[in-house]
Length: 416
Image 1 (cartoon, rainbow, N blue to C red):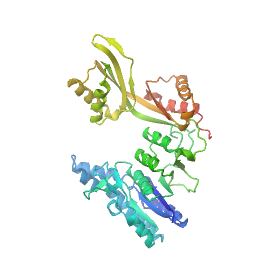
Image 2: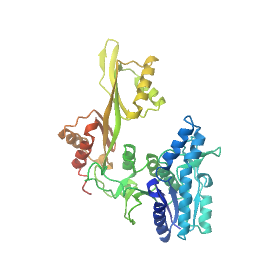
Image 3: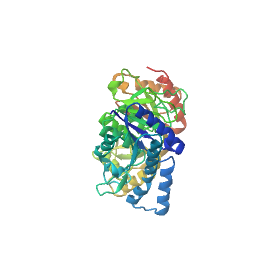
Image 4: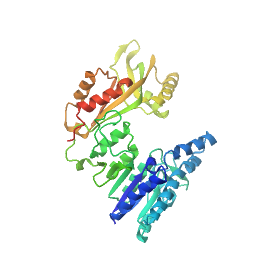
């Protein structure tokens, strides 16, 4: 039988009525001739509740017990989904991570997959079961303890199963009906994409688009798993949603596919640091050790000073990591590994990015972007580029204006 993986997020299984609605979608695929592996999240809000209980019980909690508690939400959903399918006369069985088994590393709360043997589930399919309902977000460590994969881990679970079982496709059911050219809440001109390349989706996910978890897209790109994002709350068919696929499946794409944004960014500048070999390592090594997620980096032109050549070093990071970054820099200065005159922090910036595989073969994207921002009197503070992305830091108050201006400049409301 051809095999399909279907993943339902928390809002899609928020209560018994929604679980039944999801089960009907699974039944429809079984009637089309598929064996189905269903990956489920915990009911909406349940994981946050479980995390809260752990933190109230033990602020300095044992990570192994944390995983034991927070993974239980998915177990409940999996059992209820299997029971609902059985009531619909669909042969279904639920599976927890250790039963598959989903073998992971021992890094509790942020485990990584090691292997997903297919023998146990395939044996059940051979017995006549049509659906395996698997609890997402969890696995089992080499020591036999329950592990969890970190937030958004059910998306990653779904893609990993699609790869392990050579599924025809992995359908991600969520509360939106696909991937849009930008956030529809910012501009009503946002258009749903029929297809988007893995690389574009990976950039959009890493830049703040919340539809798919970044690790799931990385895994899909690595194993060429065709992903489809579609709504749990609408009638769907083979053409619904957005297909995330290999670039070869997209005949001709626009130069820019989407505009992404990240609201909570900060810009930090070390003023007057020595311009010498090893200075970048002396700065970014301590930041890495402190767990600061550095993104954009700019080094100013070197100037001559009495003590030798000096420069300014600017980088961006999430605004909630500013205190950690500043402490790492002050500690490095106190230790004598770096020196600077000032540490300037701007916590009121946003990152705006345009993304598209078409940039590889088309010139003028940067010029169009900068011209559009200039026309709206939006000042650019930092610029960063890659083969298929251009990102800028701007004042946060101009974020929505910038997104709308760039969406219009690249005519993203028009298909083809």
